[in-house]
Length: 126
Image 1: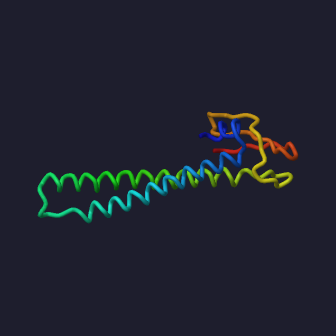
Image 2 (image 1 turned 180 degrees about the vertical axis):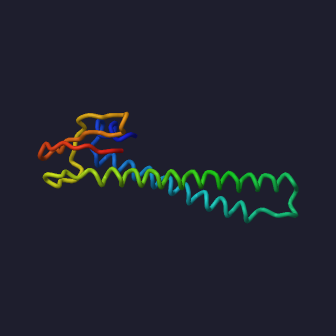
Image 3 (image 1 turned 90 degrees about the horizontal axis):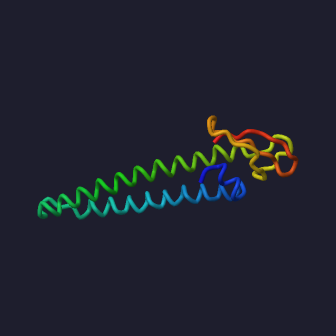
């Protein structure tokens, strides 16, 4: 879910929570791919029939590809959430995460938000 959609439908804190949850779900997928990769490498044998060897090699390639993808996705989602969270502090009253969406500019990837406590407005790039 994009930041503007998250601010419209939920609060900033819910959006942040969902981003972190999604990020850590990709980390879990990476962990499962690592286990699958180790298992596929363990069952590989040169004395096995050629078809079994091909299946084992394909399993290693598949687990590696999905694992690399999930690692990249995990890091992207985590860093994106942290980058936005670092900008979610009101400069006037120093309130964290209590903000509402005022405007969005898709061309510059910025949203203008307003503090719910003091009504101060500032841009957040996402």
